[in-house]
Image (tube, rainbow, N blue to C red):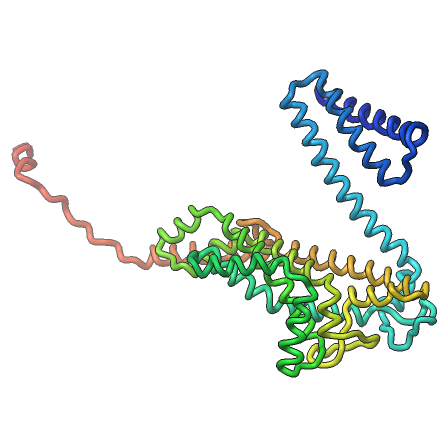
Length: 386
C-alpha cells in the first residue's frame, strides 16, 4: 500500500515539476514557443524527473520497468486524446448541419452551394456507403475466410506463395485498387461507373486485411483441439467447421471489422469507379453513386461555409455509421468460444431432453436377456456338501 502511494506521489511530483520547468524555459530562459514544443519538452522532463524520483526507492530494473509502464500508459492516453479530439472537432464543426432533420432525410438534388442548411442532406451518401460496403462484404467475407482457412490448414509451397502475395497487398495504395477496377471492369468489360464497381474496388482493399487477420487468428487455435477432433474420426472440413471456426469466432469478427474499417473510409477508389452525384441512387449496377467519405471530401473543399458545415456533418455521420456497424458486428459475432445466446442455450436444452427421452425409450424397448444358470465346475461339485 505504501509503494502505491509513493508511485502516485512520484507521478504527480514529476508532472508538476516538469510543467514548472518547461514554463520557466519557454517563458524566461529560452526563446521557445509553440504548444507542440511545450508538450514534447514537458514530457521528456517528466520522464527524467520520474526516473529520478523512482531511483530513490528502487533499483535499476525496477526503474526501467516504471519508465516503460509510464511510456506505454502515456501513449495509450495520447491515442484516446487524439480520438476524442477528432470526434469532438467533427461534431463541433458540423453542429450547424446536424441540428437540421433534413440533413438525415434528404439528398442534395435541390440544394446548391448557396442554399441554407435547412435544404438538402446526406441521405444519398449514407445509403451509397451502406450499399457499397454491403456488396464488398458479400465478396470479401466468404473469400477471405476460405483463403485464411486454406493458408492455415493446408500448408505447403503454394500456401506460402499466397501468404506472401496477401502480405504484399496489405500495403496496396487505394488509388491502385481503383485504377485496377477501372481498367479491368469498366474499360475492359464495359461496365458503367456504378456502386457495384466501387464495391469491387473496396473489396480489393479489404480482402488482404481480412485474410491476414483471419489467418493469424486461426493459427492461434490450439493444435490439441484439432488432434482431438481427428482422433474421433472427424474429417478435415468438419473439424474446421465445427471446431476451428467456432473457437476463433470473435477473432474472425475482429478481422472483418478491420477490413470494413479499411474499406468504408476510402475516397479515391469510389471517385474513380462510381463518380459523384447529388441524387439518391439505389441501383448499384448503373449510374453514379456517392459515399460518405467522397461527399465529405467534395463538401469540405468548397469555399462556402454552409458546404463546409455539411462536410463536417457528413464526417460525423460516417463515424456514427462505423460505430453502429462495429457494435452490431461485436453483438452478433463477438462471443468467445463456448458462449451461447439464450436461443442457442434453449435449443441445447431441448436437444438434451430429446436425447434423454430417446435413450430412455431405447432402454425400455430393449428385451431383457434370458437368465442362464451359472456354470459349475468339477471343483464346485467336490466342494458341494453331500
